[in-house]
Image 1 (cartoon, rainbow, N blue to C red):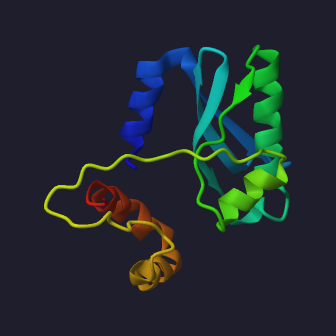
Image 2 (cartoon, rainbow, N blue to C red):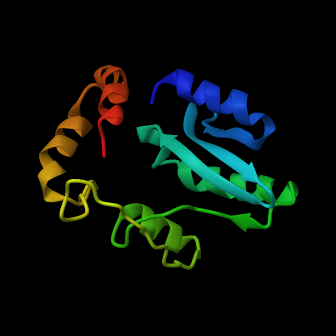
Amino acid sequence: MPKRYFEALQRVFGKDCEVLTAVDKDGRPLSSVLSFYFRDEVLPYYAGDDLSARYLAANDFKYWELMRCACERGVKLFDYGRSKQGTGSYSFKKNWGFEPQPLYYEYCLYRRDSIPQNNPNNAKYRLLIETWRRMPIGLANWLGPFVVRNLG
């Protein structure tokens, strides 16, 4: 997503939109999450990590700190969002002790006979995903907003 999109989110949602960043001992950003606060819940929505975050458990620390800060703020519900069973994010959330609850989708199909399988587990996207992972970060950041507009 383009930087201006995230700037707009922060401008529109104000104090209900917050970025938390875990840094290394030199102050270099390792892992960040942009969260929304609504009533008595926090919704961590966009997150990203530097490659070195894994070795320092920065991702775990980031979510621990988000939960701690949310509790201080009086939040009662931590909404970790949807994850498909069998994925890394599903396992990560389960490891934190969150119990999955089924959430149902409703579809209205136009000019289709079946639901599109636009997800990373679809084999037809495997080559594209592997290519994207090997792409230089500058190119991925430049190309990303154009690709995102055409997904789904």
